[in-house]
Image (cartoon, rainbow, N blue to C red; front, side, top):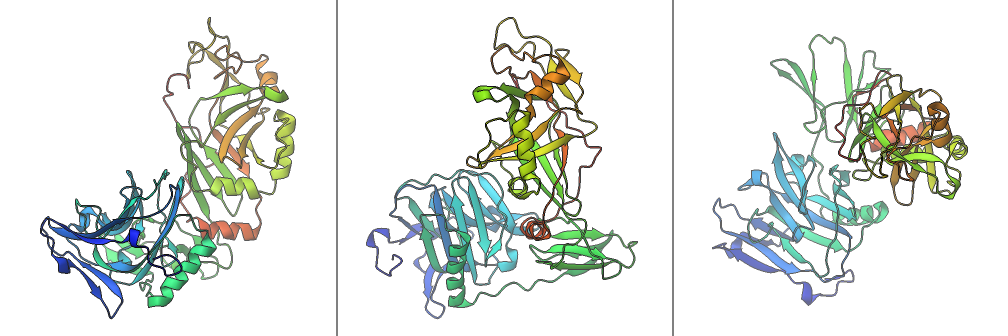
Length: 495
């Protein structure tokens, strides 16, 4: 039925047998107003609901269902599907991962989220929001951190299977009371309204989770509740955040660490020390962003000898390259570039350094400083024929090193298309090089400038913004510092 309660006969689902699947494997529980799926047979027979939706083609969809996965199901380690739209446009399944069961999404590619084993057998509000190139999965409002960079394109009047992947199996065992589908991506406020409505139907019970300590052969093992931040203290006053293995939700503790206190919680009232946040972005290869909340140190580390192109259109004078066209990461870098306290000053500096027409509000800048181990190179001569790459080979004698101290480097973003770029001011490069690097001889001087991606910046954020980041991104262990260098990378031809 539609949102007003009117029946939609063209969207009915029919109980469908696979092989000799028995009719009573799908039944109605009148006491709990739920449909029960009970294909407990290990054989190939099964039963599911099938039909189709009535909607226009879309790249966005929001799906809610109220119910639970059973604790045990035949072929649970192969994955059991609550529903599959498409097929393979968006789905919801429970599958094994290590020693637990996690939420998964399959739309031609398998994407993995957090463990949901704690919700087994418990009536739960499950919600999924897909929107073009993003997806979020929730259980009772808890973000399940679905990974990956998907692409969603859902054709009109697509099929719907409930209780299985398709006629091929992967049967759902559990119950489902409500299934709500919107052909748009709901915002957080609307999503939470629907979640609240469904929660009030059955008052879902959260799994009882608490910090647990157990003995192992090697010492002690802490088990941390899902989505909790772990902190430790030696005096119960000063707390330091401790990263842990978020997939298994465990931390090994040495028995020699005397008088340490631990606590885990979802929110903090004051910022603990030692919070490090991390994300990766990618174009051709990856770059890592590491932010220390208490000091404001940000490290941007990628590959050696990355190639830049010259841009002189409309009076600009800069060297540039893409940073995030194949993976935009978690959103941490975008948040920093939008909110950092030096944003206006960094933009003014960039405009003066070569980004002369980048005055619109959509452009954001983050000025970078080269780390000590960073190296910058320019090539000496162009090829005999423009466009050839025989004088722009990375790591070759085509290049000489120039002093990076006086070069202007910046990350910059077009907030309308989401692209983030790394750039170097054209005047600063030519002052150090003494020439305009010829690159491949084209007007863009492709790869005339190469630079190791090994930079730092100092970020100014308010305490409120730091707390917002702490509660949005789980802390990680620091892997970069002032001594960091770019990693070795075999550049494809022409890059």
